[in-house]
Image (cartoon, rainbow, N blue to C red):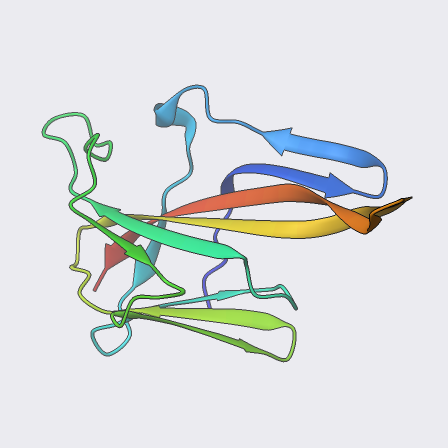
Length: 141
């Protein structure tokens, strides 16, 4: 199993918000991840399935070693037939078809989390917060 370092996140912990924002793409860790029987399989240690899970694949821009600006393909993994998401035992497993060796893949997850409930004359309402996290990997054989 390969551990992938988050490239960017905005997350609330008990002590408050913690963030890592990308200001220079050259500083993002791009982790090599091998295809498994023609599929890209990633496992995330979270007991909750994300509210949104978007994956984009990119070619490498000539000369720079960085991903091209525009994705060559994007999947909404909660609705796409080429991407499956399974939540089980404190993990979320993402399996993606139709990626090629050499592609750079960005995985972006978003969680809508109810934080506070307020009462009013019209009833109770939960305040939602958006937590986000992203990873970047290079597909290898």
